[in-house]
Each structure stands twice: as C-alpha cells, then as structure tokens.
Length: 249
Image (tube, rainbow, N blue to C red; front, side, top):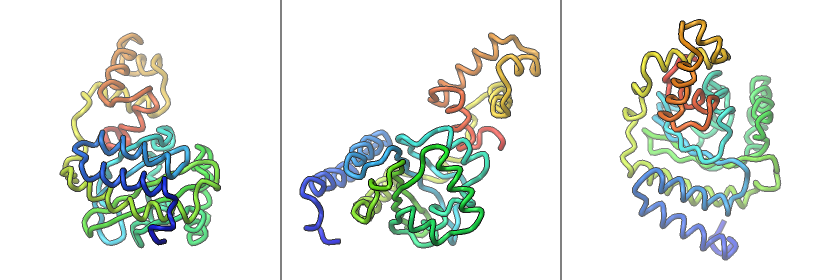
C-alpha cells in the first residue's frame, strides 16, 4: 500500500505516532501512544508483547504492555499456557509481518485451534489484526481485537505494517532486557501462598481456615497484593501473577 493511499487524517496520525515512539522515554509513554493509535485502528481491545525468540518459538517470559485486553482472559491464557496453541502467536513467530485473524484461522484449522478460538470469543475476542517484528533475538506482536469484523481490514493491516517496526525499536531502545522480566520476589511467601489459594478458587474464608488466619488478615494481605501488582481486583492480581510466574499454574 502506497503512502498516498492512506486517508489524510490517518496519515497525519500515523506520523504523530511514529514521532512519539521515537522520542518516548518510558513504558507509560509507549502506552499513551498506543491508546492514541487505537483511535486510528479501532477495536475494543489492545495489547503489545515482546519476548526472546529461538527459532520459531517464544523462550522465557514475555514482557506485556496491556492497554485494554480482558485481564480474566490473560489469566486463563497464562494458566492454560495457551501461547502454545494460539494460532496468531504461532503465525507471528514463523512469519512476522501483519495478519488478519480470519486469514490466520484458515491456515490453522485444527480442533485445537477451534477450541482456542471458541475460548477467546467467550471474552469478546472475535476478530482482530496483529503486527509483528523480529530482530533475530527478540520478537514482538501488537494486537487490536474486538467483536466487529468490520473494524479490521487490509487497511488496518497496512497501518500495523508501518507502526509495528517502530514500536519494536522503541521497546528495544528503552533497554528491554529479557533478564529483567524473569520472576521477581515481588510478593512475600505469605502473599504468594494466599494468592495461590485464591487462584484455586478459594474464598477469603476458606483461605483463612486453610492457613489458620483470620478473614480480616486474609483480606488485608489480598489488598496489599493488589497494590503491589497494581491490580484492580483479585482476578486481575491472579492474571498478573500468572503472567509473571509469581505463582504456579
């Protein structure tokens, strides 16, 4: 797609996004830029991830910048290790470039893929467009998703083909280091224990009985956990902990 084929407003917006990515100094800067990009691309949900790659596979824990993806879905995704069956991720590591979900789903038409797609749709992730970049050691993927297929066409695909490499370079420039996202001791042993039981579906009362604590103490620890992980609620905290491998699957 030639530059002149973009709508004038979108072209101006894209130039602004690229400039912002070039001068960004923090992950918060990147997140603000992605939010402005969503006005151009569309969709309900937006997420960016980058991680070490070896061959055609992800190695280690990826770094995620979640703008608006459902945290409940990310929790399920991490717990069930769906990155092994996610056709969008598989396609991205093998080919890079941009992809419309509907096209990729046709290439991965197995029972496993159909089950994955059905699970994603339960969280409102019906349609999407993703753009990926790799420099050999690091592979990234930028994804916009939502319920309406009309949001995602070849036009949005071309937008991501322009933006994705700049986003990848911005993240690398911000001293992205695979070692920096390995599991950290962000939670105390007691907090990890409580969150592990919460992940198993136990209520505060059940956890208090199991650990011999008062319900008030369990609630206090849970609130502290949410603050440490910058989580909105218990489900969000569990999702973050699973993604960062702070608790066991």
